[in-house]
Amino acid sequence: MITRGIIIGKLIDDLSKLQGQIELRCQVGLTDLNKYCEDFIKEVLNICYKLNLKNLNTERANEPGLDLGDDKNKIAYQITSTNTSEKVNNTLDAITEEQLSKYQTIKIFILSKKQGKYDAVKAELMKKCSFEILNIMDISDLCKQTISLKYEDLYTLYKLFEKEFQIVITEIEIPDKEGKYPTSFIDKLEVIPNTICQNAKRFLVEHPQNKLSDIKDTFKEFGKLPRITRDFLEIIIKTGENIDGNFEITYKELKRKLRINESELREELEILIKRRFLFEIDEEDDNIRTRFNETQIDIISFGQNNVCLNKLLVSMDFTLLDE
View (cartoon, rainbow, N blue to C red):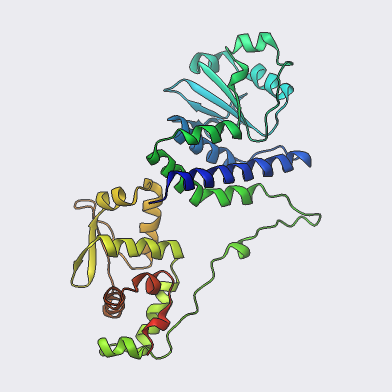
């Protein structure tokens, strides 16, 4: 289990990196935020403050003054990289009577660093929106909030950052003079493992019915999966019931054991189903079933018997099959 300290340290480091990147953008005059960044912050706020914020700009283009809203908790946020009193005034001034009837609390979340004082915020606008200076937040407030979160919420936040944070940072990168960005899809492309077996003699002693060509084909098929998906497949093998070399576990049980959100779970399952490592899930019995062929079954069995399944399946070190 990852400790609270490790998770909190990682989250604070990432949030500080995000703040630094936003401040750098502001210095060169780039103050716009794309929807991906807004949606990421929305999920972070939802986890940290037990909210159900939705992106208002999705439902209605350029919603005046506000970006995120939670109708049930009657709270709304403006997400901005600009930290000036003028920005606060403009935000409050743009908020409509209709919005004020829907949201009792208005907050401004600044992705750069907020100012020490906001003496220039107009009193009449604050009165109009029942707004207080304390409702101006920034990354440091979010960092403080993470420290008080329950472990389950911390872990959920950790998984969100693990999946989405690098994409957010990439999305707000600053191009060079030639318009090129520091990160490209080529840079992010996962390297295909090249640790294929040469003779597989050690494996063939235990499973002589297999052919070397079939073993190499298996290496290629596993190699088509993203590394994190191979890791996910290993979890199914480890936690599922072994039925003649294939494995079965219910959707609900796997979700509970992994403690990941619905979309992440379904994403991994869809990849494995498309690559024909899992059967389509029957909605009536809700079971997840692997569909390994004979060679795959034997390689997985070899990995289990020799305590090297992770190295075979996740690290893709098929040299372990050699003599």
